[in-house]
Length: 229
Ligand SMILES: Nc1ncnc2c1ncn2[C@@H]1O[C@H](COP(=O)(O)OP(=O)(O)OP(=O)(O)O)[C@@H](O)[C@H]1O
Image 1: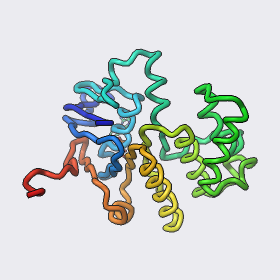
Image 2: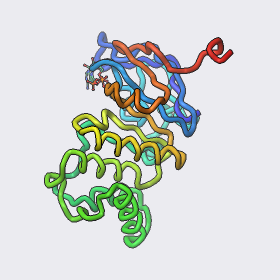
Image 3: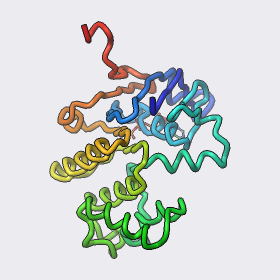
């Protein structure tokens, strides 16, 4: 299993539980949607996966490793194996498109400048952004910024890709383009988790859907044995 939650609770404050008794797993190479109304706990759950938060109770295992037990020197290795696309992109505004993507590899000591350049251009070409590499994010449309954020998350072939409401303000054509990029990463072996409340996106793709409601798991989307028979 790539992601395992065992009876996970998360409280930001003492008496405010954001997640309650969450158990589910995601297999290597799987593609799942994570859905539920605003405030249900989707972002919190993603943050537990990439180790930005640790559970108040229960365990989160990523590729067999208990995230809470990682030392501060091990945590960066976990983070490197996970590509994250945030709700608000978090692009560096005073850096170019090229630099925003290259930074993922540079902080990881990912090869010579020539190697890094090759890999960055390869992924930016896949995203259809090769003509905009010298622009800064404020000169890009929302869809283009999203594709740069995706390029940054995918440039090092992560084991896991997490995307938080990745198609929020995009039109249908852009949404489908982003979905295709997720699918291609998944075909190459990346485990993909997409948090969204976009019903059309979910219905379009027919992947397993994990549902949260008020911090609880209302449906793990796992096929029960009686449904198989
Ligand atoms: N940093 C924080 N401090 C305190 N409470 C928080 C914090 N972040 C989130 N919460 C609370 O945790 C709960 C779950 O929030 P979360 O952002 O995970 O939901 P969500 O499903 O991602 O919502 P949305 O779809 O609106 O992004 C909410 O009640 C929220 O108020």
